[in-house]
Image (cartoon, rainbow, N blue to C red):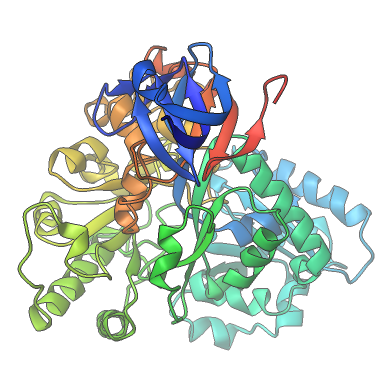
Length: 548
């Protein structure tokens, strides 16, 4: 008597990702789970209502993103895109075109500029935006999200004064003569977020954009994302929005929602149901800013901005938040980019564990010793050797963004100097030291496309292949390690490795079919891989092939 199942996939090259080089030829799905993974003979023991012949195509576990801001990305779809501008003049031209079709007095918002890519290599200022228009309030946000520029009309409407700037601790910038430059950093940007109309307050438009973006993610093999709220910029997230989409059959992928306000976590059983695509995630804590905006907290001053050490975190506030996470049974996820921010973060974690020692545990059972663990460290771009030693002794996982390097490699030496850059973007070193690294994008800071992240981790080059051989090539990782970052490692960080991340019997049926074998092509072609099919919980949510 054959065992009954739903779908059989045969004649495929299935990389299970359980270990490097481990492959299978067939898989069988039942009730949203993999119930068999192996050879053809074993698969024939099952009677399936549907059989798909893959004609030798490559299959991987579903891909994920461990850290992005989906609300922000969707909001950016309604703003003036500035990602491709390569000079102040070009930026002004794009904004002038928008001003020409916008009624006087109406807000104009631009997003995604990166001054390090400008010919002038300087931050825009209020004067630049005043030259675009004096009749429209204009604000533009840097790609890292940590800096906003405003023209004088916008500052007037927001009630910004020199006195406010002087009291801001440098978050509202003044020039040498004491005049407002229009440059706002970190929490100071909220004054504009509170008054600039949010197009996503229109529920119809919000739903339309969300559905379109989520479908595009499924089409690139993404089966799971961790989206993070950021109330300091009014980037809202909530479970109800995604639950509504799921109820309407409009949610093609899994969404884990992490907030930066305290919340009640989802019931434990939600993570054990392959058809449940929405659940709560971690509690987000900010400690510093970004290297691109020179607001990441450093132990030594910025090489290209003497006297600037970045925005310093409050150690006591961080310790209090970690204590509250313990009380509320929430997993902490701590944004720490600069080495000083990481120092303070590790101090706080060590103090927490000294006060609340972990129970004895079996070897290798890191994520089972406590439901709140591991503590997630987001970004960790600058890690000194002494910090790596400390992290090895702690129950932490690192949520990193390989795509950052495609941009940062062009200016990181300016920020940190020749010596300190040797302690940045150390993916290979961190892995060899036994730390768990998950792959993300911090979208809309960079593209959410996981194949670009895999390409960046393997090549350490920009999209054009620069520099030859890769930036600090000794830190390149293998293709297996890079794909692991975007598949099997993410569930370890979110305590879901029992159900997701690899193609194994008993795990969720999340997998993708590719047009090329990533382990058999030159590294420079990784970013060009096409996804042919995407499955989530055994359900096909995307298909590019004929006859789907």
